[in-house]
Amino acid sequence: MKRTPLVSIICLTASLALLAGLAGCGTPEEKPLPEQESEYKYQEPVITLYDNDTGEKKEIKMEEYLAGVVAAEMEPTWPLEALSAQAVLARTFTLHKIKHEKGVPQHDADASTSTEEFQAYDPERITSQVREAVKRTRGKVIKHDGDYIRAWFHSNAGGKTATAKEGLAFEKEPTPYIKSVSDSGQKVAKPDDKTWEASFTVDEVRAAVISQSGEDSGQITSAEIAKKGPSKRAETVRLGDTEISGSALRMGLGPERMRSNLLDRFEVKDGELHMAGRGYGHGVGMSQWGAYYMAEEQGKSYTEIINHYFKDVTIDQIWR
Image (cartoon, rainbow, N blue to C red; front, side, top):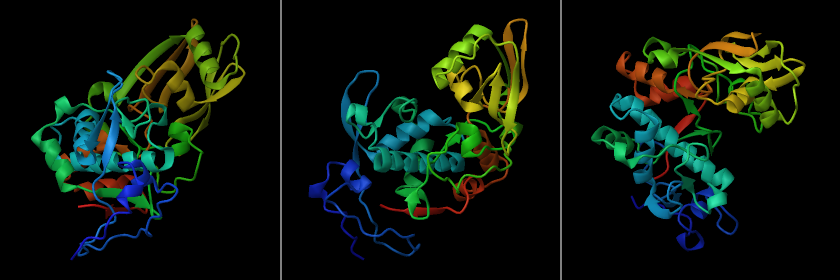
């Protein structure tokens, strides 16, 4: 069958207008595509990638870009099904950012190589296994109610994934496809990704609170978890008389040191805030170590992995 032409290419520049449905370029109604269907909504776009190291921009095909993302975000030697799940999430994440946030407008680009701004990207790590994962999932994305989901992922959930509110303090919009589920990543994760301990001076903590909330907690002599979420993460913590979300405190103190907000210890002693916790990352969406376990130990497919971590979603193919 003849493919449906993409929304008029002449009214788009690369992918932004094409995928974001910008003014002047109406898009046909999206719907889940039957397996036997051979007509697709889009052609593979060429996106503009900003290199944060050099300050240069280049045009790159979406699927080639995704190979560099998967290679950087997950170990390239991991099982094919885990890498495939990562590829679908990375593709979905990219398209959601382009459609809803215009990519990285501060650089006038669709994507960047910065993990703070976008996703990790390292073409030097691409292997044949990574290329196979991207190829076999070509054009596939995750949707809920007809739109791209926020395809969050993290290293290890510490036994149970988080809701968007407790893991990221995210309340910008409803995310009904995010659920708190059991996660087996704790069985196979590296020791530092399973459990961790950290200590911070009260001055460091005070500065982190100010930077994240704009409030000065004053001298911090006490600390407690004020509210826990469904996965038992510290959704809100109290430092002295000031409350702040656990995820905001983690960002303020540094996510490499405060590795999660799934805390087993949280107290001020001898002028320092002492913590101990489980897992690594915000805990929302797909656990990468959990995906590894499901693929390697349970023989699960990438679609089964995705449907374990996300609720009521479809995996749609939007280009061939």
